[in-house]
Amino acid sequence: MGVLWHTSICASGQDCNPTRNYVYDIEVFYLNEIDNQQPCDIDSLLIIVEGYFNDDLIQIYINGEIYYESNITSDESTGIAETLYVDNYSLVNSVGVSVNKGKMAHLETDNQCKPIGIRFDYVRKVLQVLLYSKAPLYY
Image (cartoon, rainbow, N blue to C red; front, side, top):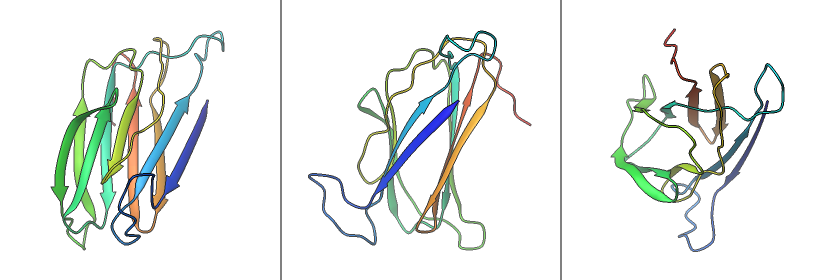
């Protein structure tokens, strides 16, 4: 299993305001535990966006198209901003989650996989993405 993530304050074509513009790109790749050859099939996706937000625009891209967008402001005491669940999520080519603009990288999948989580921190902003196989586990 491998996870690559890249963070940048300014992507090409964007307004480069370092205090408000954060772009997150994630590439997820991992193999079936049984034969260590076949990629895994993800059926559902839980996205948890955490951190301290002040009317920040959160956009989620699926295959390059915006699936969800909302301006969010978090409570300083908790810092939890938004939780999203996407079902029926098999064989997705690209997924995007960003603050302001951006596109997440490539995700390809098959069906013998356990849940995996990706988490990274950048300037007090945390993005957590949990990928679930055919039977999501919620504990």
